Image (cartoon, rainbow, N blue to C red; front, side, top):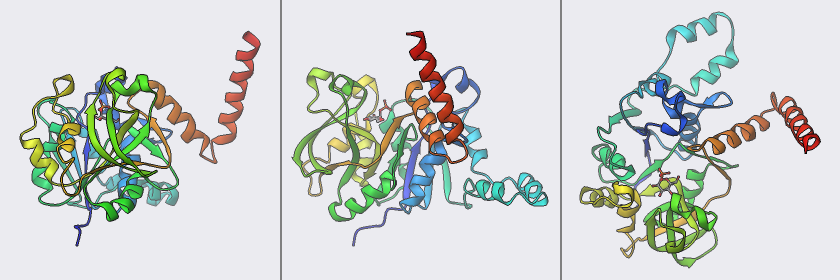
Length: 297
Ligand code: G1P
């Protein structure tokens, strides 16, 4: 029987330089879409897929993340005294059970593959998920849960995938498709950040992965790749042609690139509009802007 997927790695060691000066004092993953930090969206998606152990690969300056997932007895007591049950409920979603969360430091910024490799001793011989919190995916069902349902049939390695404009392929891992079965594709090649003219397709890897422990073994011996970094893409590509192979999964949902300012702003607007308590105000403000822009033209 296939081993259950219970562990997820969250690589959160990046310095977030694109969001300086904000990220001088707070981790990028604590930046909020409306009132929930990026990392909360990632954790909720993992929980929906049945993940029980959460492994954070962090770096210097990320201790706010540890506090965020810790219990806050004083705050909880205050809220309880004041009868603020709704706020208490919200706080509860940030609490992690003792032992459910682990923090590992990546001491040198050697790339995403290296970050994942740092967590190898906590994974042992079982499949694991990787979630990049920069990629926020809004859908009726979480992206990882969608992937898990298909993975239960396929086994092997699976990456989330999405078509991007050809000129953007150099920002992504890109799939060379062997067999296109609709939402699922089997993969015969994977290239990290190819130039548009060299990209095998425009089907890009998005930050959700279900991986076999073989990938960790590949990372033991993985040379630096694109950008001089140890790339997760290259270690996954080594599984192509093995018995279980590698798959891409075209998920249902809207992906926001919250590693970029414009993607972050778009997500802020979208999540704001999705909230009953904010929609009307925000919509009328957006209408106002549209009207005054038209008038200025
Ligand atoms: C990482 C991966 C890349 C993937 C991307 C998705 O790149 O290396 O393969 O397509 O995430 O967001 P990064 O954005 O960290 O440079």
